[in-house]
Length: 273
Image 1: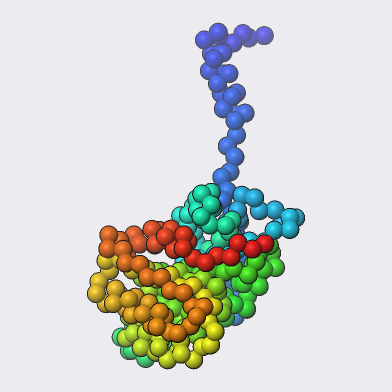
Image 2: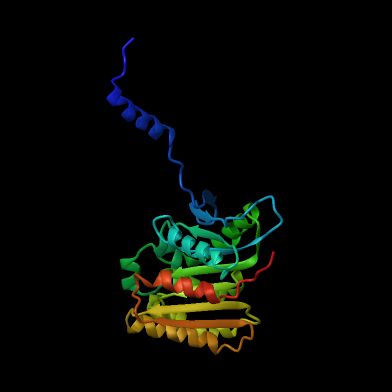
């Protein structure tokens, strides 16, 4: 029998320890892919669950829906905000649903008659289908698979903010809270913003809280966000609350994280079970 040289024994022990210490996967949630009959394609959502979430327990949670919610988009850092604000008792434990994109220009825009836009972005104009997907397929999917209450929040930036604005003006009951960051209201030469006073006047008894933020992003975007906030504030709706925040040190690339942090601190999220 061969003897192991005494100098090799520490090395062999170290290798044995490293083999024993297998790395465990780090998980912050769940991923689901399901077929959308409305969009006629598979869609993926990423789900962050609160630490104490227990499907067998009789507790129900608010849901935050995040546009641009893929793992390589905004899901990870917004999940971090959700966890942190819960940890410091600013936000009730909440479920985050990140909606991964397939074609955001298609899904977040309504049809335009501007030839230059349709030529530059030929797939645009599918917002109506995507909104139907949110209300008729995704929200029922989340309600079926998770213990949720009636508190819902939608977060959208840029073209996602355009989509969120469209929902606020046309179907405000879809969500309880709206976080609209740097909305691309320039789309279709600002037609949605032009129609906003009329659209909001046709709605009765709107129950929603809208948080709008914009940074140092050019006069056109800043003015449009300000005008949107003014339209909502002047709407004579007793249960429509609007917050507007200008963040001059933020750009279009940096504003989302800081503005969502501030938005989730002030939104009227029901602490119900």
